[in-house]
Figure 1: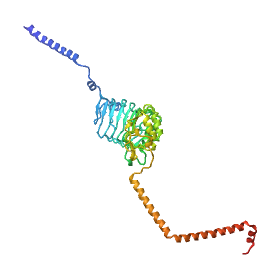
Figure 2 (figure 1 turned 120 degrees about the vertical axis):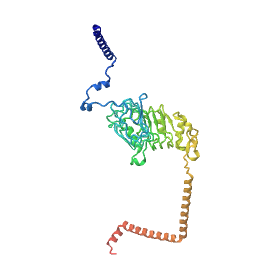
Figure 3 (figure 1 turned 90 degrees about the vertical axis):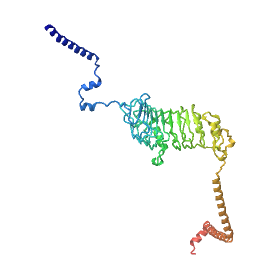
Length: 420
């Protein structure tokens, strides 16, 4: 039928349009919002001027030679032979390890970053062959509490290394713990400078470290402590001076360290502690002192220290302290000594005794030869002595005669008017 044939195409066209409309509606409902990548693809490309002025993205990536843990807030760059501090450090870092590197020099603001490393609290630079630390090297680290520079041959340590480039105007360092163990450089690199003086200058410059609580200076071959080394560290609680070459503590004062809790002086060359040092240590309310492995000389100068050891509770392990000199007192426990045991009789080592005996024999032989020569020439010496006596007598008689003439005015006038 003609009518039926005409309705067939119209119905098919209607169905096709309905299917297309359903597909369009389905695609509009299921399609998500434009993604950032799609938006960026549809947006026009930025001009070179705007790209140059745009701020760089925050450095959140981990430096390639390092290992990072955002959960632990830790970055480790260990034994990577880095020659400088990595430029890209994640801002979340709280513990940074740069050990086993080849840094050589820490310049000013070596850790300045944008955004700043505001959470960095512990910085370990041990064993990185650092030879020079310049002024302001640790600026822009407002949360830095612990710094370890141990095992570096520090030949040049700026007086403002732990403060700003100008300590008089910069804020005090936030450091609480400073480790400077085994940092002594070779002697040829000091160039006639005192290593003790270099360290002391850096510690006391501008009162930058007055909040410091722990200071470690172990294994640095220190011969003495500068007089005012501790004067600018009133908050110190732990001081480690073990394994040095300290002979005496006479010139250093602990009086202002009222918060000091531990003082490590083991493995030094201390021979005796004098009354001034004993009184200062006894006046610190919380201190514990460690004195093991020192060569104590048990003579008359040790009397006061032995008496102090018997009374005090400051010294830890005091029962282990023993005498090293003299030989007859070796290995005697200090707490078991009495004042009668401590004397100052000169006791020479056997080699020195032998030398003095040999010198005495030589001098005795020389004296015997001299006396023998005198004996053999006794007659000539006696005649020579008589001649000297007669000459002196004649000379004195001449003086006596002239004195008599000068004393008598008549003889004086006679002698002056005489033609003889």
